[in-house]
Image (cartoon, rainbow, N blue to C red; front, side, top):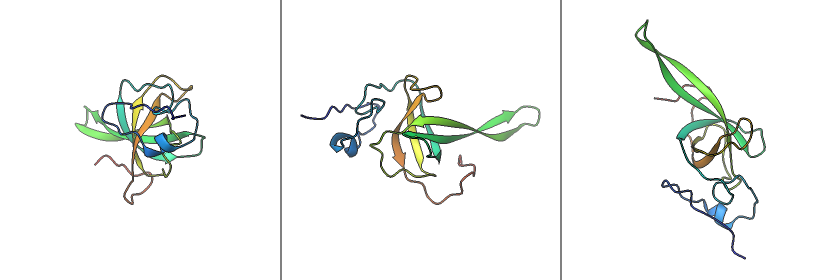
Length: 127
């Protein structure tokens, strides 16, 4: 029996592991019943201590009008990581897409993983 696989669209390729793998994940955007709609964001993997969920860090600049300058800020987000992404490690850059709420804190799903060059862990990675 062939495996159920779908394309999430938006120019994201379906990983080979999703089509050839044997994992079962209802929250996977490629093999489950999750649709990706809304925002597409990027972040850096910070922690991988949960099962099928990772914490990513999003850096941004906030303008302070009084001093006519920008200050660095960041937000941590919990995102669902499908088992089709095998070799993800701390420091990698991931592209995530918005989906329906999967749990109390998880509202995004990993769509693409790009390997990171050697950078420090908490450094500001916007520029």
